Length: 124
Image (tube, rainbow, N blue to C red; front, side, top):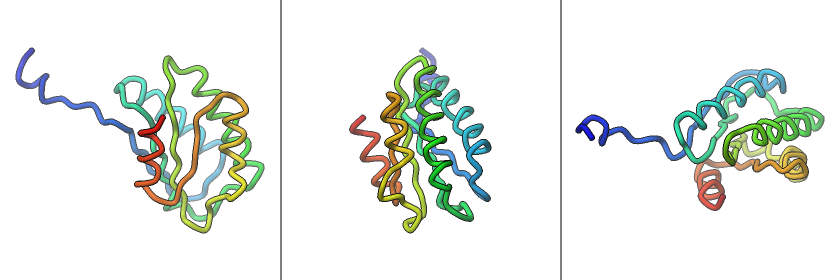
């Protein structure tokens, strides 16, 4: 193995930031590409940072996103947990997206901080 190859380090988690209006279809496109990148890089999971979005997803979009993320995870070649970081006031106490994903066999959770997200990903 060459010296250059030994220096290459795959990220433990891929972190993707999303800014602007959180529209479920746009967000799912970002997640779809990110899941593919996680698979290709052999990262252990995905951190989706929504802290710079303009407003929270509607309850219907949370359920749709959770269901769609579970479907993406089911098609992946290996388990890829997804941790979502949201602005503090936007954290849904009912965890609608998380529950929708879990019901379909997905691994998704939402947090207020990157530290919480990383801790959850380590436990997956």
